[in-house]
Image (spheres, rainbow, N blue to C red):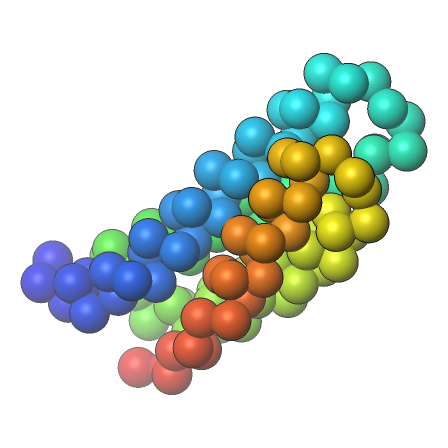
Length: 109
């Protein structure tokens, strides 16, 4: 478990991103705006991938590098979509996803 401490900053960023994405998806759904369908879809995928990546880091999994690359792709796509919407929750999600995407990529074990 001590290996996970090497990833603490990454885990924090991924967890924050997952929370922002979940909040954004829920808020978009409650607003009932059909124009936000893609936003909800990307937020949910991004949240799931961020949580998975953080969990793999906690386990010191050999799949961390691949998961973090996929997570970066999802974060960038989510940020690109969310920034197009004026809702504060979308703007916050876009900012959080961008921060997460800028985390240094990890190398394979």
